[in-house]
Every structure is written in structure tokens, then in C-alpha cells.
Image (cartoon, rainbow, N blue to C red; front, side, top):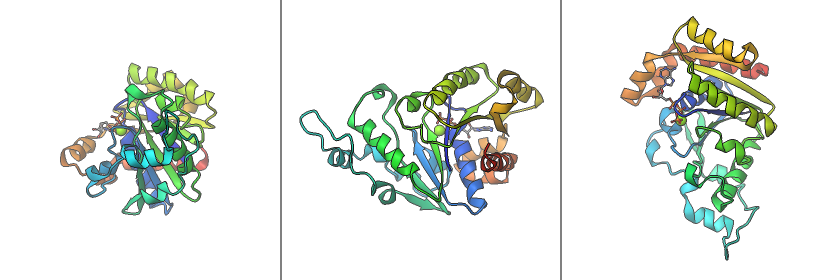
Length: 251
Ligand SMILES: Nc1ncnc2c1ncn2[C@@H]1O[C@H](COP(=O)(O)OP(=O)(O)OP(=O)(O)O)[C@@H](O)[C@H]1O
Ligand SMILES: [Mg+2]
């Protein structure tokens, strides 16, 4: 199953991806996490040792030049890529991780070799069988325009009880539909009370909401300590497990 996690900047995408990965792993399933955000920090949240030393594949200029065979302004549209996921995969505590990165916002939309490389790489990754693949996308909508997201089984859009995050959801949703993603749901984050949840339900309707994570003070502690494993003892981990159950039931 291939799950993508999208949403506005700072809504909790990386936190949700980590919780989903842990919950899938605890069910005995094989998990591959993919960090596809230019500001990569999924490795740290998942507790990988020396996370900051992991170089995102997109920053490996020589590798990309070699595979793209850039000559005289032209480059390969079909580079050889199938060895890359295994070569650059990290593993910690039963979870595999590929830190892919992405082309920074200012350069996006370009038909540059890096974009072609990333698109092919993500397609290669999501062809992997017997693994639950969870991708942490960059904030916003750009990944949907690049042809990297359409092969997902389920796209989760993280929202919070704010107008801005719902506006962002309303931009992402039709784009995701347009590129043919089969299932698109939302996960509400930072829910403080029933009023927050009611606000979201009144804006979305029930069918699009897959689950929610409560506002968590443990998250703040985790940030302070740089130790996100403590989230596993918090209510939001139980809530994430419920989200996984719904995902496995088919959303
Ligand atoms: N339920 C929650 N309760 C309290 N704090 C939270 C919750 N979820 C996430 N946070 C905190 O909010 C901040 C942003 O979360 P996170 O990094 O997961 O968001 P993001 O969508 O991945 O951000 P970005 O767009 O920058 O990648 C982090 O400090 C995180 O610990
Ligand atoms: Mg993030």
C-alpha cells in the first residue's frame, strides 16, 4: 500500500508520517518511509542516529549527472534508477527510510534533470511490493503538478482547525483528484476539543475525515528533547493506530 501525506506547511505531516510508520511496524508490517520534502527532517523524528548526516539523494549532484547523462543541454528522460532505492536506503529500529528531498520551490515546475530524476525515483520506489510505503511530501501543492503523486493508493491531507489549512485542503483536493489518486482523505491535527472537530466536520463532511490527532503537549516536549519516541506513549499514537486501522480497511 502506498500512502502519501500532504498539506499546508507546519500542519503536522512529518509527525503523522512517523506515527503511521511506527503503527504499521507494530502490526508486523514492512514499512518504507520516504522523505520527499526539501527541508528533510523525517529521519530525526523517526529517531535515526546521525539523522542530520544523511544526504538527500537530490543533493548527490555527481550521481544525478551520471544517470541523467546531461550533454549539450539535453538529458536522458529515462535514466537508469532501479538500483538507487536499495543503495541509499537507511534502516533503523525495523523501519526503512529513503531521504529523497525535492527540488526547492523556486526551481519547481522546471523540466530540469533533477525533477525528472526525482519523478522516476519515486515511481521506482512505489513499485516496491510487500512494503507499506509512506511518503512525507513537501508543503503545498507542487508535488501534485510534477507527476510524482498519481500512483498512490491513498493520499492523506493533513488539516488543522484553522481557515488557512482548510483553504489549503480545498486547493490540494481537486488537484489530487485530477491526477487520478484513488482515495483522498483528511486527517485533522491539533484537535483540542469537540468544538475543533465539529468545525472541521462542518467544513468537510464526515466522509473525507479518516481520523484525527489531538493537540499534544508531549509533542512540545519531544521537540525540546529531540526525542520523538516519547510520542508512542501519548494519546496521539493510539489515535494514529486507529487511522492505520481505517487505512487497512480501505479508508
Ligand atoms: N498534535 C500535535 N500537537 C502539538 N504539536 C504538534 C502536533 N502535531 C505536530 N506538532 C508539532 O508541530 C510542529 C510541526 O509539525 P510537523 O513538523 O510534523 O509539520 P509539517 O507539516 O511536517 O511541517 P513542514 O511543512 O515544515 O514540513 C512540530 O514542532 C510538531 O512537533
Ligand atoms: Mg515536515
